[in-house]
Length: 303
Image 1: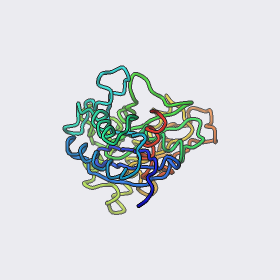
Image 2 (image 1 turned 30 degrees about the vertical axis):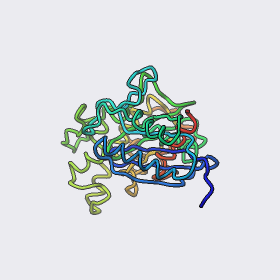
Image 3 (image 1 turned 90 degrees about the horizontal axis):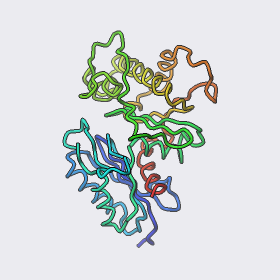
Image 4 (image 1 turned 180 degrees about the vertical axis):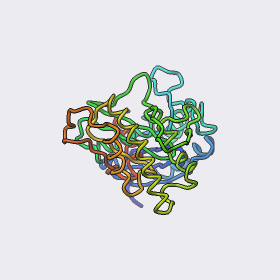
């Protein structure tokens, strides 16, 4: 029997799947145990999260639990609905007390310290501490998958009345694209035009499953939208590094295509160069672990 160790727990709650993982207190950037759960109904999913937390911790001592969740969430600390899911396109999840449910599972493990943030804020925390954004003065993490979201840091995390909903910035329609948009709230916002479901609406399949000709056409179109969205976001928060993760971003050539589209959309303005001479758009250094490692970091550093 192995000797129990102190561990931190991370829960990355996504719209398609949940990852529950642990890391040793002495090595918080390295995943020890990992469990993946499909995101279905709130009750079934959150009960499965509790069981996965118990199994992942096993005979070890859990110190903290950190959560990175899809949203939108109420993250106003003074709110009596703190950690609750707000109006979301994910059927059945609006009004669910995500933080309260998972914090209850944490208590069952003897853990009193828990923290929650958005999935993209968690991924940014992981990338800043252990990944591609380490040492960056200002960075953005964007996910392009089932949904689109982004989080920023510029001498500290950028937040305001609540968390950023950068996926819902308005983008112009591509001249050759008649699609009205997938978002049930805004139609043709960035998420409505460039998320995974929006790609499937147009092309009948996931980007990574298409044949070469369809994949090239879809990549050009989606990169165009993401590039235009980035230009709008960077006009407000001028970071030097953009890390883009999520399922859609895994298609070969995605990051280069987005960088080219963003450069075209910016049209040479502003004239002030970025710190490295150009804006860097890169994949996550932690790969698929960015979100759950970041969730662990949120629990470890914010409780």
